[in-house]
Length: 126
Image (cartoon, rainbow, N blue to C red; front, side, top):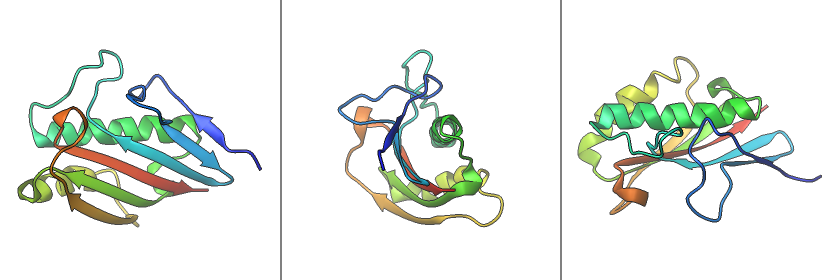
């Protein structure tokens, strides 16, 4: 079974040698998304709430392109620069998973691409 590379202009283009997502069978692996505006390439970073919503909208665009939705997500990984922002990120993130939220881990890291404050990846299954 061949894997399918997923790409949409509704999410930021990859900034390195990776794909936005890879569909392997009925499982979609979505690369970490950061708060880049897909139209302008500019960072959306007024505050951590805005950053988190931008990341989630980018994830949603990739999921949608592959025929998936947040309801299909079984696992997320959140990378953040400061655990002090955990509750604010959690509040914004939670708005996308109203019921049956996926498994998840949240990891504080020293630095993220383009010095953003949050990056989120996910795995979805049909």
